[in-house]
Structures are given as C-alpha cells and as structure tokens.
Length: 461
Image 1 (cartoon, rainbow, N blue to C red):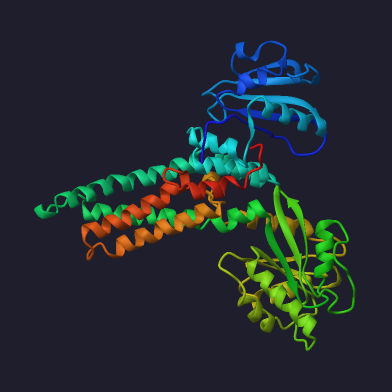
Image 2: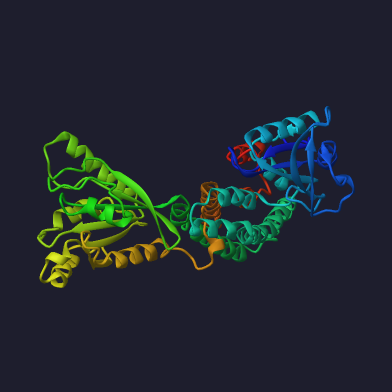
C-alpha cells in the first residue's frame, strides 16, 4: 500500500555508463540529499533548478563523486512530492554507495514502479497514463513509441471518462427511481437509455477491436512465410533480414521448425517467421513442423504465401491455409522466382484467382531482390490498415481490452433486458459497465490490481 516514506533508486539502466541518475522522492527528499551535499544548500534553492556540487559521506566527510542535483518541489513534480534527481558518474561502485548513503540518511529503496504509483495516487497521472509510462520505456520502434506517447497525453482516458460520465448521469436517474419505487415513476427515459447504451457499446467494441493490431505493433507484428517445400521461404527470410538467418538448400524439407527474427520497416517492428514447407508427408518429424507452421500462420497478423511459377494446383493448399486464417489476418500472395518465368504476370493472375482470400498479389525474386521493396511497402501498409487515424484511440493494453469487452457485455445485458428487467436489474448492469470503464483509468481500482500493474515497472520508475 502507498505510504509516505521517502524512497530512492537508480533510474538509469543497471551497469556501468557515462552517467547514472538516482531519483529520491518524498516529503524529506530535499533534506535527505542536502545532508550529503556539498555545494549550494538544496533546501534553499527554487524548484526546477539544477546545481553542481559534491556527494560526500556525512560520517567521514569523504567525497564520493562530483554530481548535479536537480530539485523539483511538490506538487510540481512527477510524483507530486519533493523530488531530487542526482546525476553522478556511471561507476557501479558509485551507484551502490550513493544508494547506501541515501538509505543511511533516512530514505529506503523504492519498490518496482513505486515512483509512478505515487504519481497515480497523487493524481498526477491516471492509471491508463501510468501504464503508458511503462509502454514508453518498453517501446522498441517508432510506431510503438508513438502509440505510447498518445496514451500518455491522456486523450484515451478523456474519451473513456466522457463515455462513463454519460452513463453515470443515467445511472443516477435509475437509482432515483429505486428510491421512489412505490410511486411508479420513471425518471430515466428508456429510449434515451437504450440509444445511449447502444451507442456507447458500439464505441467500446470499436475500441476493443483495435487491440489485436495495436498490441501487435508494440510487441512486433508477426509475419508468417508459408508455402510448399522449395518455394524459397528461407531465401526470402534471409533476403528481408539481409542476413543468412535460415538454412537454404535444394533438398525439400530442410526447414523442419520455425525460424524467427525481427526487422524494422517504416518504424514498425515485424517478426518474420520462416516455416516448414506444407505438403503431404509420412515423416512424423516433418509433419510436426508442418503443424507448427499452420499454428504460426493462425497467430500471424500477416501471411506471405510464397508460390513458384511451376505451381498450378493451389486449391488443396488454399483450403488448408484458409482454415487457419483469422478475421485479423492479411494474406499476401507472392510469386517467387518470378525472374525465371517468361510470363510471370499471367501466372500470378492465374494463381490469384485460385487464392480468393488473398487481396494482395505481387511477383518477387528472393534471389535477385526483385519486388522486395514492394513487398516491404505492402506489409508496412497492412500493419496499420485496420487502425483508426486517431492513434490515441488505439488499444495496446490487454487489461484495457478486457475491461472494454466486459463493459460492452454489461451494456448488452442492459439492452437485451430493457423491456423485461426491473429498474434495479437495469441499474445493476449499468453500474457494472461503469465500474469496468472506471477500472481503465483507475477511478475504481483494487489495490491488488495496482500491485500487479506497477510490479511490471523497473525499480527506478
């Protein structure tokens, strides 16, 4: 649980570096640091100023390191408390000694995520914005960073709060009806309640539907490369990665398990997966690889189906692949070895008519690089094809996704029972929807949920 202890931690990555930053937060933060500070008295400086001085051991007055202390006074700080950030040289010894001195002076080592949790408790951030802090730290691509920044700016939270407040107004009227149940009066207009519940449910489901693509962007969009043996899947993976990642051989069945690596295209991280060739086989090991290939295809956001000019019958394989396509999967049909075909365009046209689930068709050569830029552009466009233009309305957090679905489910129960349920049951479903939406921003959140969320953070954040 939240308490008022003064906490400290190294906020920069562990290990040796040019500099390291220790963060101290709490009512006594400035006083504690000032006890080991030799320079302008930090207790006298104004907020949001940086000062050069020396960190010393108060017991012996022995210097530890020259440092820069930046002071932020409450409530105008990240946590809403007094904060001092101490920049020292990045020696692991200096970092360890600095934390030891701070603890001896009255601070304690922070728990994971405790700084951000205090920012939430002190209403400097709502819960969705606090989680966006962790997403920013974890972002490994321009697209993931952009989504996290949009969440941190609070537009998503404001949108959820607006929807929730509309429901709260009607919930208050329903509760009022319960107080006057013996009078047989109706304060909450049922048509308005039905229209509002229907509209908000549609919005919640629309937001929830962005999770599959939004989460994939933050984690790396899975792209499965599938096809028959010797269609050039491993060669394509190596060509896209510009490295010999997968074994290339003319012997069918060389790839018996999935081979995976990542690449950044237009600021988006993609996880390319080379799979075993799909065909009929009596080899149990090879069959296991084929089953894994189909499983990876089922979980992929994008599938590149690699064919060759000599493939004429795609129907059987198309039937197998179509069974594993989800509603979120984009299928790209790529005719490989097109440089060897005298009439690549007619062949691709014929194959695309057989593969009706593929909306994108292109001719490539993994060997020469022909068409690979077009392929990269195609998958980059598909990565964001299902996302709204407003990036703040893209859901990337699994907890938010589940809360949106649960709120929509409660509204569905309310809508279905509008004509048959009593006011108290309508109010129950409405309160359930409000509670689920409140949990997203932290307006109503249990301490257990808070502990789970902030445990994911590093100690210095």
